Amino acid sequence: MYDVTIIGAGVVGTAIARELAKYDLKTVLVDKENDVSNGTTKANSAIVHAGFDCKPNTEKAKMNVRGNEMYEQMCKDLDVPFKKIGSFVVAFDEDDLTTLDKLKKQGEINGVPGLKILSKEEVEKREPNLSKDVIGALYAPSAGIVGSYELAIALAENAADNGVNILLNSPVTNIDKTAEGFQITAGKETLVSHFVINCAGVYADKINNFVNKPTFEILPFIGEYNLFDKSTGDFLNTIVFQAPSSKGKGVVSLPTVEGNFLIGPTSEGPKQPNDLKTSRNGLQELREKGAKVVPNFPFHKVITSFAGLRAKVAHNDFIIEESETANFINVAAIDSPGLTAAPAIAEKVMEMLKDKLVDLQANMTFVPTRRPVTRFMESSNEMKAELIGKDHRYGRVICRCENITEAEIVDMIHRHAGATTVDGVKRRIRAGAGRCQGGFCAPRVMEILARERNVDVLSIVKDKQDSYILTGETKATTVEFV
Image (cartoon, rainbow, N blue to C red; front, side, top):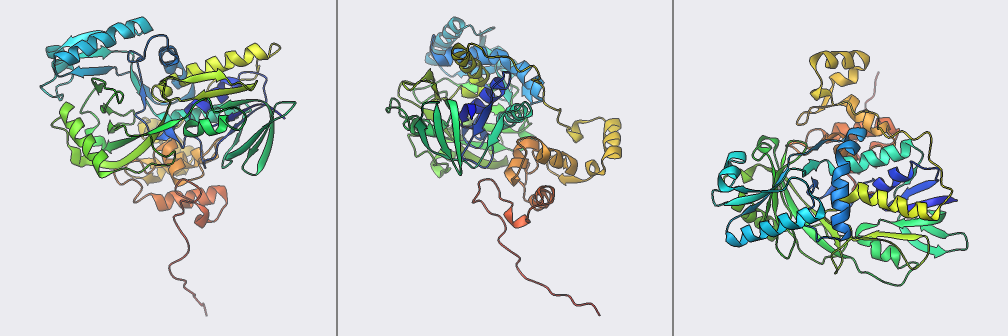
């Protein structure tokens, strides 16, 4: 019997799991995918938004600003890369300047610190590679960039370190209300739980409808992105938005926390909840809209394209509330700025549970920090020598693009919520995330995964359960010794 079952292991579900781990609760985190962070969390802009573009007094506005305040300490505790580099919303004409003024006033109502309208000259001084057609910008110093899936993985790991169970490859196919709470069919498991927290992303409406009347409909919108080689990572110093439209924040150009450069997303929908196809039109749109802001950008240095889904609803606000069925909490429609809001959403959900669990006790053994990640190539020469002396696998580079060693990969396999797939290694330690996108290191990563997990290399998949890589030997050779 669980106290709480969380459905959905994206950044919101994992943040809630870690928050619940601070208390004396028996919690399980359930997801249909082969890994945590395998939905919207692994395919977004990875921006920690300041909060000026959220309508005042909405859940989005409240959770965004509070979440932003929590990020620096959270990422420090979990050893997750985070940089507060600020953001611009750029203006190309007088109408855009009017929009910037409205956004500034709205942000000030929301409590966003340090907002300032910059002149053309100030913008050029800070960002010389921006288009000369830019005539001003709204500057938000509290905005930042983060490793989004790295954060969700770290949250899951820390939650598991503190006693939360994680159940993957377990799609929820039914929930029944019982006298004690809920009976949940999750893959091959039947779970019994006092509370359910629904964080199922683009499937949240379907999870809700197992025990409630249909009160909301998720509208999945697709956003396409281009990711560029690290040689472009210093083209901008700041996150650069274009003035927003009815479709959203528009195409954004930004350096990533890992040193690459990202342009995206498009916005099309509603789509099917499993539609992750990139398109010729979408990628052409990225090129055209990106060139408006950074006309001299080397677009030919793209190393991969991808798409992610955002779970919208018609009224365009987060849903964080108990459903008509008692003890069933919906955390749904968490589109942008959901990544920023995640720790604040977790805080709010915990307060909702405290109201119901009046005798709830703190977990006196809770450890808020994650075991630090050894990033070999970022270490000093003295530290490198010391690491190799302790473990020779630090001296064996597997991913040449990102300079990732065998010891780092092994570490990420054996942690709680550790890597079991090629992409799982890539998300945790960046082996395969570089210029060749795993073209050279993937076979070695597969061998390491098979060896460390003591499984046949044929069972190692790229990401999802059915994304096989090897099916068998191409030829069998028999050698006889005499």
